[in-house]
Structure formats: C-alpha cells, structure tokens
Amino acid sequence: QKQHSNFLPSSIMSMNFSSSKQFVKPPQRGIFPLDHDSECRPQMQVYLECLKDSKQQHHKCRDFSKEYLQCRMDRELMAKEDLNK
Image (cartoon, rainbow, N blue to C red; front, side, top):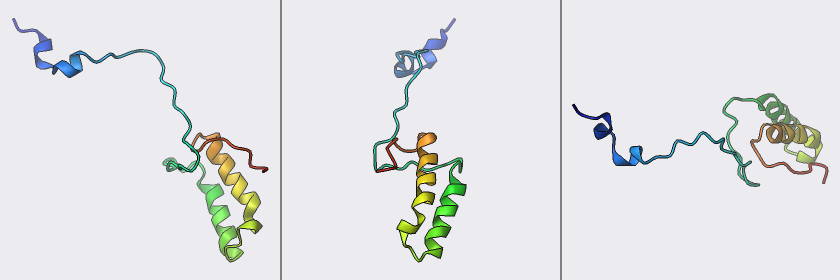
C-alpha cells in the first residue's frame, strides 16, 4: 500500500500552514495599488471632471482631491497621511 505523501513534492510536504493571521501593511507613500473593486471610482470621477472643467487647474479641485485620497486611505489603498497640510 502506497502512502499519499509519495505523490507530493518535498517542498509542499515541508510547508508550514500556520493558522496565525497575517498582517498586511499599507502601501508605501507614492505606491498606488489599483482600486480593483472601484470603491473610490465615484470620488475619482468627480475629481477628474473638476480638473477637466477647470482646465487642469488642480488647486480649484483640492476638496475633490482630498475626498478621493481619503477614500483610498480609508480602504488601505494608500498610506494614511494628513491631508490638511
């Protein structure tokens, strides 16, 4: 009678399947993971529309930018920082 472990590569047999919870660090500043679930898409669209309407004068869209960045921070899509600086 053959043992099932003979069918598994030794690398799989030696893996430690720990039940401890892994902690995910927020991304570093300047690294922007994609918003795959489109959670912040409405805020992004409002901000981009403001940029378009103001002929790319981003200072006129500051509040919309803050809302978009806050959405990303709340969902851990970017590192938290003070937006009032």
